[in-house]
Image (cartoon, rainbow, N blue to C red):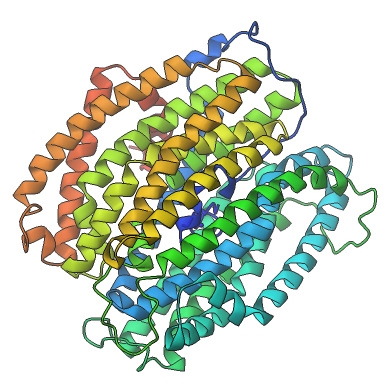
Length: 605
């Protein structure tokens, strides 16, 4: 499950809870970032876009997006390393699926009961408060005090109810359920630290300080990787020392689940210093009457409703995803059937373009949207939206094709070097990758509603998408166990493709024409270039034995890494060359800030 962002029954957000099933299915509500200003919807007579809309995004916003993207990329790279190490440690085992199911719950509960409020409501309120003579010190102090108290209460209640919550939300039974509950007791405290991370991060973002929020997950991943390496060193890998429910020990739980939570703690703690440097002189403050929190509460009602509706449906999806590893403990006879571990690994991969590119651009452009909404500048609002969609699309369309082509080597990397698990991940990833561009489009479209402090419309959209998603999940549950995960992946893709259609219909009615024709044409050009790069990639992949069982690509993790590096680089070069040839301006808007940063760090002659 921003950052933004587990059982992806939607996602750990980049800088907050992990991406999982959750965040992938309901992108419109998982990592919400609303902004202030109520305004009347534009009329059709209003200009579609200003002259500036011919550009993509302002240079300052592009630089901020680039900085966030670099931090997010570093976090993702480490996240991938963590996933690879995790695969080596517990992939291809029932224990791995049990851990994935338990590790999903903290993210799900946080997103359902607090994430929407923190991520979708606070930025505009903090931004307003920052204009006060005290720079928002009083409001933010009261907000943090209330938030910490609420998070402590929520986490305590969830911990007390760990057993029934785990039983209701998963299909685990017998010894498998007992181990899941044990994992849960170690993992559920993450709820508090996810919340603290979001609170501090939104304070930083509202003050245009984005870097720390984007880079903090790096610390989380370093801690988690260290814990997994200790686990492998002491307990052995899944290949050398097969881990089962029967031979699992308390020490292994401490090393696996304990260090996972320790990483989230560290991720939250590193934000304390940058918040302190804002000079707000924050301190605990009680008494919230007439503090300004009432305005946030009005938006929060709809936002909370959106999150509850969406995430309650994910409990059903989680139960479906854990059917293959349900069992009653002991034997690992179902370990070769794709389970929630396969789904999560594929989800983390397909959500990567969104987390690195779309989320970074949306976070920065959300501020621009908020200012435009506050000043009733509808032309500026449409300009920001159109620019964000086109610039994001250049990356996500290529990423969707690239993930399909490279699904095999990715599967081997995150499947612990086991070809069977690698192929399960590859098939699941290929299905999910089709919806990757649509996921990002829907996420950005929904940001416009929140920029206008309109949380009611996203709630309606979410209800529609929940019905579609649940229908697909229930159909998937009727499939044979070996196909359930593939069916769930297909249901996510259908939801992701339909999401932008539904959001567009609502947005067009409220915002008018925001240049949809130009946006579609731009995406068609991206698709043409990406398909050409994909053909080149497939041909190159054949040279690495990608189409042959037991070929070089399927032989080991290093072989898969080499294949991925070579084929991926060739595809990216071909794609950029074609875009340059087609004179696509978005490629310069996205790459120039990154190139400038690299050049600025090179030693001068």
